[in-house]
Amino acid sequence: MIKYIGSKRTLVPRIVALANAVRAATGARTVVDLFTGTTRVAQALKGGGFAVTANDLASYSEVLATAYIACDAATADIVRLSALVEQLNALPGVEGYVTRTFCEEARYFQPVNGRRIDAVRAAIDTLARDPMEHAILLTSLLEAADRVDSTTGIQMAYLKGWAPRSHKALTLRVPELIAGTGTVARTDANDFVRTMSEVDIAYIDPPYNQHSYFSNYHVWETIVRNDAPPAYGIARKREDCRTVKSAFNAKPRAWTAFSELMRDVRATHLLVSFSNEGFFAKDDLLQLLQEVRGEVAAVPVAFKRYVGAQIGIHNLHGKKVGQVGHLMNREYLFLAGPGAIDIVASVAENVAFAV
Ligand SMILES: C[S@@+](CC[C@H](N)C(=O)[O-])C[C@H]1O[C@@H](n2cnc3c(N)ncnc32)[C@H](O)[C@@H]1O
Image 1: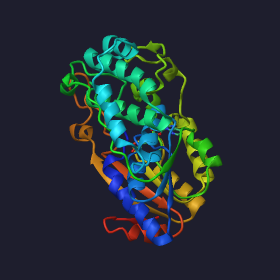
Image 2: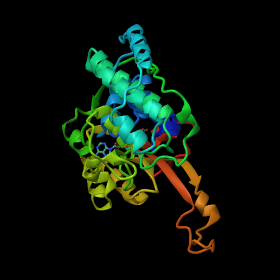
Image 3: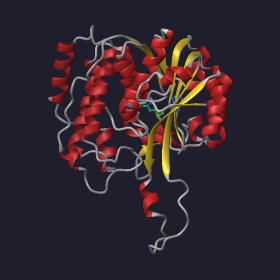
Image 4: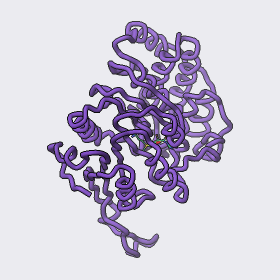
């Protein structure tokens, strides 16, 4: 799975445990993941037997969701997929947009791997016999490229010196597909909830600050779209990174967008990820959830002490100045909906508090 800021990798077991508890209490069967990103949460819920819909604005997320959520491993032709992946792995490199833009003008990948990415990306369009296979092969390429990149996990910059993993050869693997089916959308979440069919649970994990996922993962967006856009700056970002903005990345618009989303979403239970590092105040969020669903329970899931908090704030001369704002990054899961307090309390590992 690709490196992704805000990915709920470590929280997945807690989220699945809560969804299972909702199912045990209410017979819930259907889930929508409105900001699915890497699709990690959606994958785990699909693996746990829920009928899952995965939505996100990003094209790379749509590709991952088509492979992991829409595709049923039971019907996928793994022998054919393995042969295609082998064929792609044997392709000689060809200099193209990725090599020029992301390996010569920037240094996200070693040029030898950039040439392979260019060759593989072009071949996928001719080899794939349908959109599902196309998405599975693109997923395989994104994951292979991620394993040999030279970044810290976001594409606002690349490392000064090459990361050790960037010296490895780009190698595609068949993604580990999941049995079952699901549906995928690439729509603004606020638009999506106005037209979606009613579901039992909505998992909601929007961006909580000004950092744009479209800009932070522009290389994946460009590889998937294959549209060779004009690029700017040291990071060689797509030109449209200047204009494509999510309402959730702008403080004045984020709360309005979030409140509307909470009011419009057609789901009996809302499962919301929250971090106190973002734009929203916890109490405002709790009040909103109470308004829209009545009962709310909170599960504290991560309390990380800032490294900076231990060191303090220093000026350029190393002199201690100012005060650290708060010492902990706190993350919560909120469950809102009928019986939320009892449901949260039924999950053994939860130190829950009712709100
Ligand atoms: C915090 S991340 C979600 C991470 C995800 N839960 C995971 O584990 O990978 C937020 C996601 O929201 C998406 N996004 C931003 N604005 C959006 C919008 N208006 N509608 C739908 N998705 C949006 C971003 O592309 C990003 O993938």
